[in-house]
Image 1 (cartoon, rainbow over the protein chains, first blue to last red):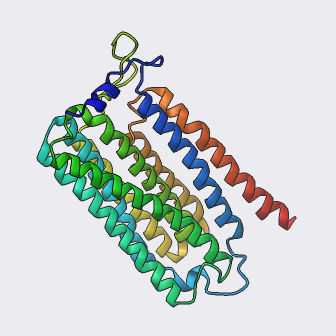
Image 2 (cartoon, rainbow over the protein chains, first blue to last red):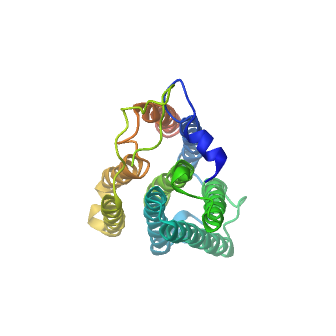
Image 3 (cartoon, chains in turn brown, yellow):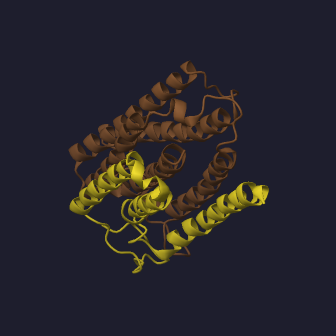
Length: 197
Length: 109
């Protein structure tokens, strides 16, 4: 078992709660403001582009629905990974952590395909207001997914080396908080950017 | 299993409850898929175009709440975690609504 994790788990705090988890929730709180700003900028400039391509010219709702489904399922895989770590099941932890990371990579693949498709259709970062605000918002979301995938792969390697036991469940739970946050941001983006264009 | 939390002296905080099990996680996952399918169906049905906004608002709020309450465990964890999340979230919501009010409503008056 990781000694640092044991020390973190059993620390004495004035709130009686894990400082690591409380601090991470505070970070997530700051991230809501960050994405709130990006979403509001997108919505304010929605429908104000004077030249195309416009959202209706480039969006492929079927494809985005599929990538949304993959991301939602990755959140399910993440909680199953946490449940396996808490249970002490090494095989289960390895499988579900890898499944979550792979689904995250599939989502990123969809995003890379979508961006490439949009660029081929003439939508670049500086084409119009839609292009600027859309790439800024979804690009930052994609960057967050990338960080999440790297984090999950790091946990998977630790599990592979036998360094992720029941005592480390808190670390997996916090990684899960980040992953689910990325998921809820996408829930909002899918509805307000794609479906309500 | 409840997350680890120890008060000074090692006493476990009583305000946290056991996290849901695998069955509930899978059930929530299925509901999330159904809600997403409902969103896309509402989008695809032309006759719902006039009420699409409230439909999507309700469905996406339901999805948001399911993830936050069950997958992020706010329903089961200590209330302080909810407070730390909800305060900035409310500010973000206020920011979005204020920006829309200024640029979408006031600008056209």
